[in-house]
Image 1 (tube, helix red, strand yellow):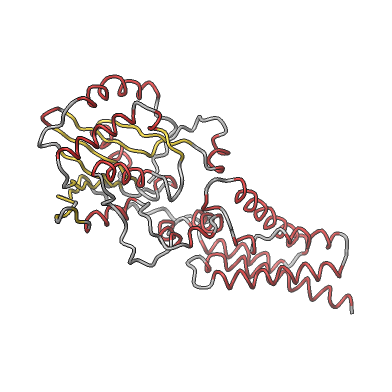
Image 2 (tube, rainbow, N blue to C red):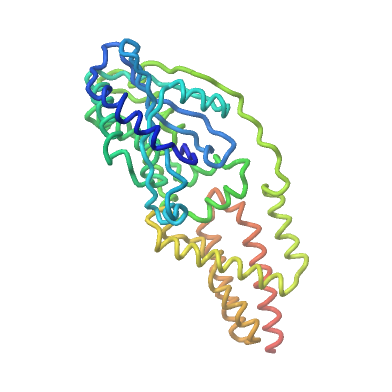
Length: 377
């Protein structure tokens, strides 16, 4: 979905901006020119789990065969990770020849599908001019947002703009939330699935009314009509690969995750539980800070702090101070937070993967409560 590369050399950009693109912007497309949406398959790397979307403009008469995409950013950007978390990291539109694009995906062994759009010559020209003009201006930069602004949504906006109407929209009959839509993409990447599940807040629990993933757009294009005719003139399979089986990981799986927390429960050591509670509390603080600091709305209002609870810091602190009354109070409060958390997660796709954490926390807190209640008696 998001073409993450070390960098696309700016010298490469300049060549296209001031040679091919300047000519291309003023060059009229022929009647036989084709505009298509390119959908690239998912890969095994984390950056390629969602696939990718691009636009291809092909005009054999004018020897044009260009691919435009909005999924590029520069790893050398100062404060790259802070900008990414904050939500003001700049992505940019780039272009290359179709042959270069094809060779890259051939090397990565990722499928490429093409959907030829059934639009007028004037609309093709409008899109061609818009893409080339934005390449030569500040419009090529945009602030990436996970759901609202990415390689897929930017392609949709460019095409809708050239058509002059919001033709490409999602069928809102589907009741899945954004979280439900995303969850299966991490099927064999457990810790990535866990991480994305717990860092997102309430926005991803909304009904998924926007097209934001390549596969979603590809399926929607097949059913959309425009001016009483299908928007998709033809579906082409450019290249296809059998999905490579991800090698089994002894640590990145649900069973290893369960085993880790089973060992914590079996060990039943106060020092281990203290370290465990501190780790959960630190994650909770990160979620709170990220929710306020980040411009990504997906990170706001994160109810996962009910599990990754900063109150656990106080539980550990009062243990160190041997204040049994406050240990009881903060432990009971943490248990209530866990009950509220389970209630919120009931019916959500990721309840099962956080269950080992819920069980481990509950057992540790209940033991603390029993131990200190007996001591007080």
